[in-house]
Image (cartoon, rainbow, N blue to C red):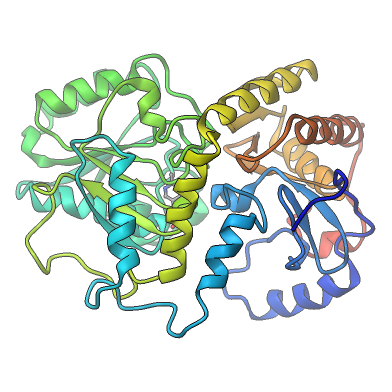
Length: 427
Ligand SMILES: Cc1ncc(COP(=O)(O)O)c(C=O)c1O
């Protein structure tokens, strides 16, 4: 669909009357209600703009939580969607073979470090993490515990949740795998060495898992050489290192994988979101014996696999990795002009801080009311993760809305009011 004139965000009312009807039904029936954005998508979204069923238009700096990297209705992705007009679209992909499964393995393995030469396709990020830790543990019969980081987020299934150290609401009353935590600071290496040398044998450590840039825990960049020194120690003691690239991978930071900024190669990777399917990636020797790991739908979502493959092709064809670096730099420059605190990030994985959590939540909601979709992360940070096709003009529009929203929401005694408060976690 050709875009004739530049689009702009435009909000009449949020939630609009049609969305309200749906949101009420959802709130009543959804067992996992967690305050979704208070509008309902239409299929008329285009590029970096979301259009809802009430005709509101929002500039999208959330990208479906980093899972929709090429915006809405990308013409090349639409062509893929149109190709799939037979049934079933989903096959039991580990037990019945479809072509897309093999094509995806080849495409994916062509963009990861050479030593990682096999992958197992699954359904989600958490499932990718689950399998990453299983792959490690199968090779380590003496495993007594695993190691993750403070503020880490690796998903919410029980295994992955054990590695997650963000919000207590995710964990309350749930049984956990035995874990040790490292600080996401320079001190990590001292703690890791102490664990290796003091707490029984290094054979007892099943794996170390790290997000090269922490995502939901606050868009925290590692201190210089954190990844390098963790890699050195894990290599020396033969402990498998997993990089969780579910959020930071697939080009988001301007390289295919965020760990490439730090010159390391992990033993195992978990990937999902922008890939459209989940994947646990490692060396063929690292994977367990036949029959040890599987999943009914894994490797069987024909359309998702084809969309993931085309996503890789588009990123290559349109040279998006370098434009992500350029646009990310521009976004950070523009944010710094607003004197925001702790503007940080790599590529289009950018964040800044607000003085308090309440300020942050108020700002994110005010932006939404003015047509800019953002997400919070960590205690009081705001993340900005637009689609890779974002233009400078769209960044300027986002920064303009943000500036206005900061002014409005920072006023003394500011409070959101009205219908919207029925559907959001309102301060
Ligand atoms: C780094 C990381 N790992 C794992 C997950 C879990 O992915 P999913 O929600 O697809 O299960 C996420 C999700 O946000 C993530 O950011």
